[in-house]
Image (cartoon, rainbow, N blue to C red):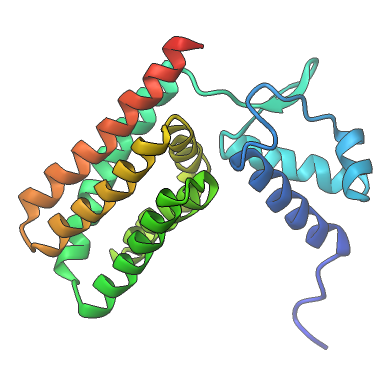
Length: 223
């Protein structure tokens, strides 16, 4: 007799609902403030309300959804406090990450990162904001993976929703010309990491994050 029984179908559905709603939030299909009615989502996704409820609870844990017993659920917005907390945490963690990556630097690492940057620059030249956002996210996630730090990856998994939301907001705030400059900034950041000089890499990462932070702050001030 097997030690583990097959997972109930509801568990598989919960994961699928979680992934679909999460991507819709990060892609802007469900903008901040959008109401997330369980019954409506269940109908649209052709599932029962149970996996929808479980998925919304997980999204709330990631900070992408806000829930209230009386008011229901809605897509979380980004406040000035959120922005400051996320950006300061990103600086702290990603400065640590780039030094770890430098210590484990290889030709394969550089090729992987440069391929992502090249694709980002092509997408920026074509004005493809969604593709730039995807490659931006993949670039930073690749850095975390290349740092080869298991506990850090576990922490990243918990923070990924909030960080990806930050990256999306920063990318959407770009004009066509700024989009290309943004892609170029990743090439400059990569050059700093490839230099093997920790101080240069840390400074480049901090500048990279703070530029994005101020760009998002401007959109919050205007709203």
